[in-house]
Amino acid sequence: MNTVRRTGFTLIELLTVIAIIAILAAMVFTVGPGMIRRAKERRLESALRQVSTALLAYSTDNKRGTYPPAYGYVGDNQAPAQATADVAYFNLRPYMLLINHHGELGLYDEFSTSYDTNGDGSLSLLEFSPAGKKTPQGTWVFETLPRYTENNGAAMGEEPQRQLNAKQRPFIYVPVNKQQAKRTAKYWINNKDFLATTWNAASAELQGMTFPPVKYDAFVLISVGSFNSTFGLVDDPPFLASIPARDAYHVAALRTYFLATRDLNANGKLDFDYNTRTKEGEGALTYTVNGAPCDNNLPSAQAPRGAGPWIYVSQ
Image (tube, rainbow, N blue to C red; front, side, top):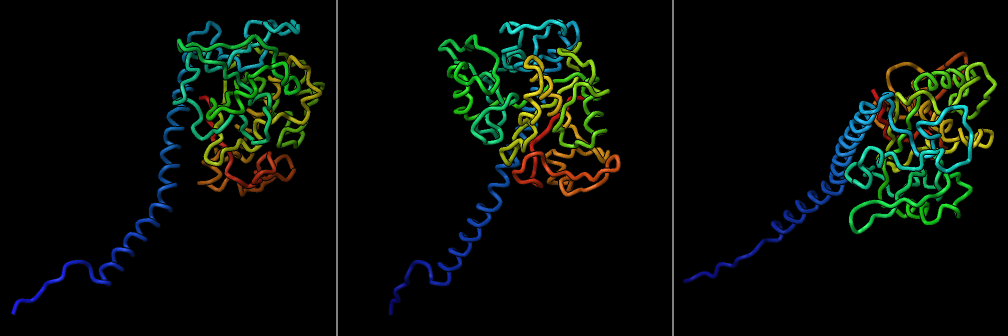
């Protein structure tokens, strides 16, 4: 008697396959995003190094050994005593253009989604960096516009909207003079103002400080990182209205540099950097500085013990 052999899966086999697929899907949904994020972080580190190398090459080629000025700074070749409202007096070109990498998205902040790094719908002084318009020939056109002040958006034409609509932005670039940075850090620490919320030009530490400095011999590059925020590090300082307009960008940059390089407990770990906060617990620390209590809450109220931005400090 011939027997008929049935082909196909048994119920147990089907349930086993379904269980395996469910396990694999769960692994993809849990492990996959982490793998993608880590891959982006590796590319981010590579881009930061490449931009840093280009900035170093600029300073090597410069007779005075200075890094390029940031947008809005008093022009690189202007005398400190000179004061004028002339547009030509200020640097109105993005730093990526000065190092010949403007528009190269591979060297931009891959985690960014706009030039607005704190998500407040506007551009602070240090967030603003002309995006320009690309011609069919591949060159970039930048309109001759006044220096951005946050209150003159209408006078800036389409430029602010281009930055707000952009899908990626360059890293925040903050060049400073080391000696001036040391003086401002001493001022804020001596006054127990650990988030740099005040500025008194008559104080002993700040008296006589003029801009531009002799040269820019240090810088930080800041990325919004995995949490897409600079967490208050590049926001306009609360004392900005008291700063002469020609110095505003320089002073805002000194505040950001102080916060970005802050290590008040001198443990060799940056207080606000993403890696030290997420991997080494820096964000949870509380200690005493100059007899005053200090913690590592971020300057922004947004996630006060959050991850923080990525910070790259020049050597």
